[in-house]
Image (tube, rainbow, N blue to C red; front, side, top):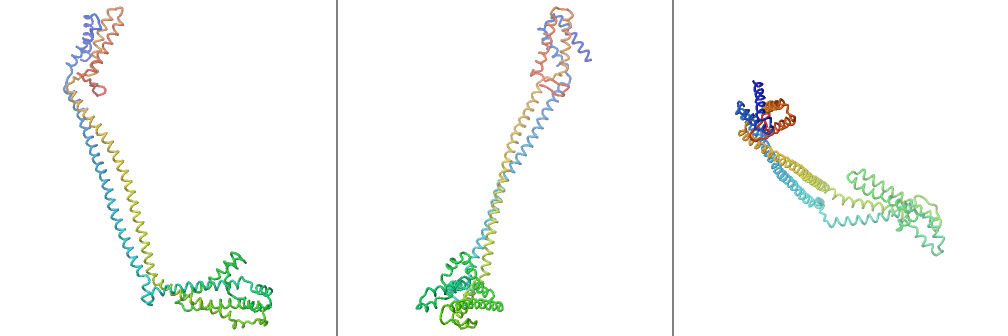
Amino acid sequence: MIEDLYDTLRKDGYESSEKSNGSSKILGSYLYAVVAKIIQDVEEKNNYQDRLVTAANNEAISLDSKALEIDNKIKEKERTLNSKGDEIAENSFVASQKSQALKGKIDEHNAEISALRSQLGTHDRAKNKTSKISQYLVISVLVLLTIFLWLFYTSALHSALIRDIDSEQAAQYELATYDEVKSIQNTTSIINLNAISDAWTRNGFFGVLLIMVAFSVPLSAGLLIYTFRRQKTKKMITIIGTIIFDMILAYHLVHTIYLAKHKTTPGYEEEWQPYFALFDIQFLLILSISSVAYIMWGTHLDYILAAHDQDAPILHDIAKKKEEIITINDDILEIEKQLEKRHVEINLEKKELSGEIIIMNTELIDVKSKAEMKRNHAESIKVKIPIPKTDLETRVESFVGGWCTWIVSKSRPNEDNIINECYQVKDGFLQEVFNSSQYFIIDEQEKDYSF
């Protein structure tokens, strides 16, 4: 039946061309009749329109759903963004509470430290009824004893280890007259207040270092007496050892001095005998002064350090409290550091969320715009006439084919030009129909519809 329809159109084209003498100018008016016939023959017109309207509306509905989904996501992002601000406020509040609690502990520790400091020295005063004045006096005596021991031992050790007493005595005797011999007898002594400068002159830095280090021996003895104050055996061994050291030192000095005088001084002609030391006043002075002095020094040191030992538990508690304060301050700094780090992270998250919201709002506007276009599209379909594209092209082609067949049958001299003009009219007519706002073209092959 379709082929018969197209054959009929070719016949109509042939006959119309014959009536119009094949004029291309009149061809267009006949083609409008072809379109009118197509519109008349289109079946189920309303079904085409309804299907297109439904498709456009369904797309609009789908876009509305997508817009709603995007809008819900935007709201969720905005709630998350607002919660980030609340999180910052909450974190700041919690961190402030923790910091305040820790600072409160610091204040408590400082108060405890002040209370502990007020207890320093109270044990000694309660036990011995000793005033602060007596403690200062003991400290003063200890300082004076230290200076005395330093002068005494540096002189004695210088005379024993560095000084050449024999040569000095001989040099003085050779330079002296007979009347000065008596005074020379008194020049040889263990006391030499220029011991440090003389050691420097004779032996330089190491000479000074030697007598300074040697001075540590009696000081160590005094410290050991304090250390072993509750251990009688060790304390006694320390005292005996120190006395032996002093005896050897004193014996060496008086022996050396005697030998020097034996060569130059009248009254010292007898050869030295070890027991002479027991009757030598310098030997007895060195032994008694050194022994008594360092024992007194150790006793006074014991008195001072004993008070310190009684305060040691309090000092330990104070040091422990200070360490706890340092730890608490570190905890406060760590809280502030973590808070700042989290705030930076949250601000970055907020910035990212804000960027996502901007993108989603742009997408939402675009989707709503497309949905509105689809609804307008559906409304425009309702007022247009559907025309199948293939059917339109085939009918027009059949009609124009019959039109040109008559022209060829007449063997006109310019028939090629006339035929070309006819096909140009055909192409222009089809474009006019395709672009017309009165029709929508149905493309059966692509299953799509043009408007």
